[in-house]
Image (cartoon, rainbow, N blue to C red; front, top):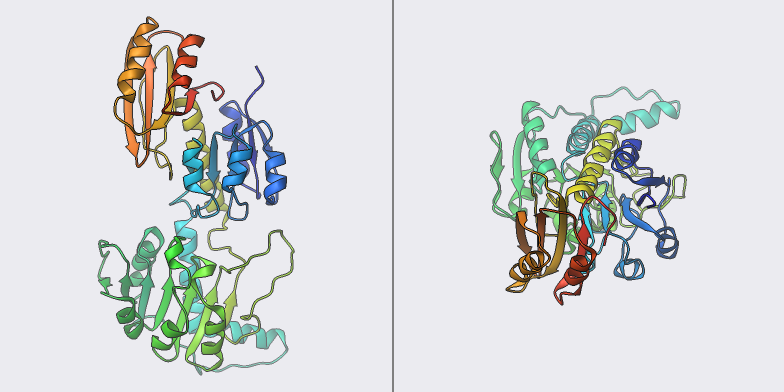
Length: 404
């Protein structure tokens, strides 16, 4: 039998190909992203797809390539994937929610210091041949108040490092979160904006965050405060940010993410923020360190290999979470509609074919159920046919072999 195929796009760290190769996959790596038609063509015969933030895995892609079994997002965000359509098609999706946290936090700390010292302007002046040695507008960050919007993995770790540097930390999050160190929770975004001297965004990519930060929010910030966005490009109104930088209300800004980003390395970049004083623009590189990319490659490829080899869905972002430990003669995984009685019918079919259930785990998530079952002997073809024929079956996988 031919080896199953995996396709890795967008310059994913080579460790991912190594791990998938060790798991039995024939792996192809492509440097750039693909548009929808090119992606569909490239997915011919592919069971596992790895992407970063640029490639869009739409419902139409999933419909046109029913053989796709799993998608790995080698990044934090998954808004580039239609998660509902993937679940309905029985396609497991995994991401890397923790792996680049430290890299983003270190970049945020660096940019806060650079903006507070106005080092961007000093750098540009020297490159232009002007010696501008002055303390005007240059400040230490010690004793300053940092406001963190979004207190998840990145926001909370930033809180710890900022406090270690002598900053006071405020945070705002829609959910109740444990305050680390001496950080204080604000009851509203407005409260945070009125109290903080530096505001940094670390929110997720949910649709409700679109346009979160615009003219009203910038006007509520304290005069001559600093602003950072290392989260999502569509969260911020860049025209409003430009206006507030030019008016002097915002003393400096750092932006790493943009509503429309170039697809390929070296493509032209346009933004209303280009050329503004004390503004740092970076090409979505908050998590782009060699350490982070290696760890992301290892983490996501490991999840994909565990899914293929054992049916494990731990940390899947769209399927029920199941991990069945131990080994047996054979294992199958059934993703099915979450209706009563499915597991009883599955077990009855196993018994009718002369097999015992050696181990079994079931979990549900919304409209879907996912059961991983170990049996006492090799799986007969007519049993697999009977399981596929169940009206509730979404996808049947014989674990450790090619997708059924």
